[in-house]
Amino acid sequence: WPWARTVPLLAEAGETELYELHARTADRLIEAVAAGNPEAGWAQFVDYSQGDGTWEALAPPQRARVLASTDAVVRGLAANRNPGTTLADVRALRLPVLVLCGAETRPSLAALTRLLAQELPNATRQEVPEAGHMGPLTHPRPVAERVIAFLKAQEAKVGG
Image 1 (cartoon, rainbow, N blue to C red):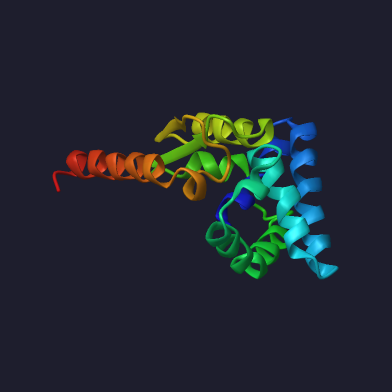
Image 2: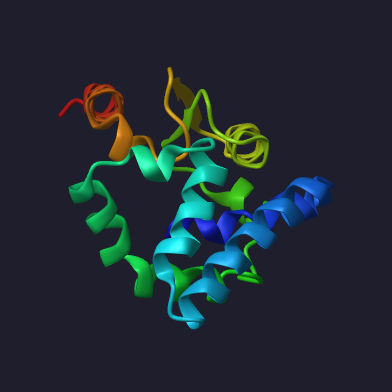
């Protein structure tokens, strides 16, 4: 999960409490997987990201997709605790970036999207109403619509 590389930026920006909350949640997922109970880890992680009861409300195919990503996500979360990406690195990125945020996401993740939109020189930040952090799974149509509109706008700017 590439977004995990940016979570430590919250600490660099002085949002230490929000960073630690998110890091503890990620650690609990990693620990649950190591203990052989990935579903319990995902339940707390998804409920943290989306709101209490979200994991239970997910349809079995959605849960299966999340569970199928466990190994890659755990490797990414563990590796990204100190990825070396700085706010200076973010500021140096000049290409257009769409920063999407679920309107109902947790404070740490909302703060991260605000920080990225503020620091990226060519960012557009949009919120997806009623979505939490897992918007691509829970609200795929509005997420896709925003991505497509952003890409079309970029294409129009370059005359494509």
